[in-house]
Length: 279
Image 1 (cartoon, rainbow, N blue to C red):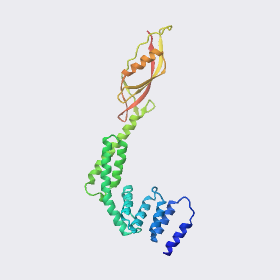
Image 2 (image 1 turned 30 degrees about the horizontal axis):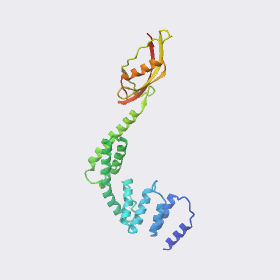
Image 3 (image 1 turned 120 degrees about the horizontal axis):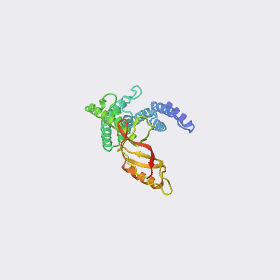
Image 4 (image 1 turned 45 degrees about the vertical axis):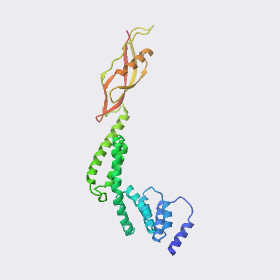
């Protein structure tokens, strides 16, 4: 009791300033050791719910709540540890045997349900083509399962591990594919195979009034999509206003074997020099 009174006196006399998480956790541990459970919970609340101390904070929160008879709240704190860090190991020399038993029971109850829930959500996101989200969920499934089959997960999870690893590989490859398709490549990208022309008809040019027959030049820039069609075209150097319009209209009929990167068709931007002899 004397230690508890002294600790409270020290705490009350401390100036109100930004809490130091490590110091707050140390004070909470001292308060717990002196059976000042409510005061310890107050100190733990100042540490916050993120950072490297979060598992230790929730461990001592669960200890205090268990000592106060608030079993359901204690179990919720343990659930947070399991879901955040499924293979967290309690320092049994620092916690009560009651907490060790409670932690094992919570893990056995929570982990299989979490695995099934994350796996089902990942499959749903794969079906909906939400590959990045599915990949994150599958990584969480594998984290729950651990480096080897988690004994708390129960029988039947070895096959799920194989499935999760396979679907994760698929999801990650599709993320790479989607990223490639969203990027527009050009001649500067050496790892891209450029598109190959299949058909590129161009209109003829009537000699503009007041001009002589001869060679006219310009530049057009086009964006070739994954199907080998021209998605957009823009005149960079004009020939004549009328011819520019006819030329741009003609690009709608152009066809290419699309560009590829690592075997995946991608968007590609390229420029063509316009060279035409007037009639």
